[in-house]
Length: 165
Image (cartoon, rainbow, N blue to C red):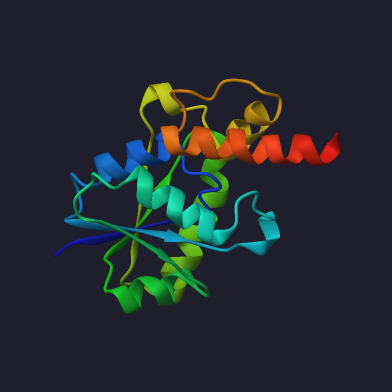
């Protein structure tokens, strides 16, 4: 069985992420969405909230698991018996960082490959950061994120708005 690991903070998961997962299932028999706590990024949603949003977003996808992980990604991939790390590339600006990470991961474990995938054109501009920024100003993110994420963003920003007032 070919197992792909799709790591990230997914803060929050977007339709661009889901696009890569769906298309990744054409290559891999199973995909684990590996959610990293990544305190350096100061996530908007807690780890538990992100895991729950992802579970709801992929509930109809067969052969997809969701797990949190800590530590080195290559160790996690090896422990899960994954064959590759799935990474999305939206633009040339993503490539330099992703190449550095892929080469470091290869140095740490020559048996783990990195598969770069481009999102569908409609999601090529989409980032979790952009989604949060638009939502924070009350803009519509419909069609950019799963419905459950849109609802969670509205609720969370409403709470923040109520606290500020």
